[in-house]
Image (cartoon, rainbow, N blue to C red; front, side, top):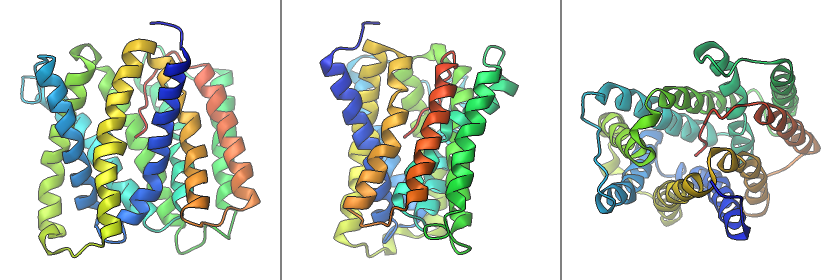
Amino acid sequence: MREAKTFDILLLLVLGLIWGSSFFNIKIATYSYEPFTLALVRVIFACIPLILICYFRRIKIQAFSKNWRSYALIGLCNIAIPFVLIAIGTSKINSYLAAMLMSTTPLSGSILAHFFTKDEKITFLKSLGIIIGFSGVIFLFLDDIVLSEKNYVYAFITIIGSTFYSIGGLLTLKIKNKGNENVTTSTTIWSIIFLMPFSFIFETPWATNPSIESTISLLYLGIVATGVAWLIRFRILTVNGLVFQTQVAYLIPIFGVFFGYFLMEEIITWRAVVSLFIIMIGIFIVKKNNKGLNNGIR
């Protein structure tokens, strides 16, 4: 892996920008689309460029091989469930709050890794980072301007969604030697298989009369925030490695707050700003002492 150059840093910024912008687009998409359908369309559009990559690189897609159970479980935990939960949560809270809460993925990932991996045990510094990071979340929940009795449950749902990313990351470690493109494509295919019946049975998407704004946001989520973003992520991982790629975790909540304030005109309080600062400090400490657990944020 090479040392990051100007173009590599620019790509990382673009990835943070794309993923940070996904939250206000999720918010707009939920105005017309229900969560299962929203998640389904996202992964369908994401799956197209992934399949094309595997085809042109002659990479065998092993979604239905003897390891299909692993791909199916990862597709469920790392894509289907978090996409649905994040859509549910973001529908009732500010989009920038969703971005901030999603940034806790490295924190919950470190806790889970302590119990389910051999080489990612919690150290004193890691525990300090986790405590600091989650104290920022607690401080955020004390802000009765942006969180109240009506929507704090949806904030918890968003956190649960981020935790499933961590679970999916841990499961992915077991088949990491199967190739990044194959694993991502295979798990995406399985997420479509899981989401489609729920969308068709419980939400009847064919009867939806969506607005143009919601449709544009949903297409953006599928094509850009999921499909194109994963392609950029592939390139960064290949050229610069996992450690460099995970730095995007610092950019996502910052861009999320920026878009929420300027495009969605969401109220940003001083408590939210302080909470973001505290959470970022906690993430920095945890990441500085991680050996490389990949808790992908999308």
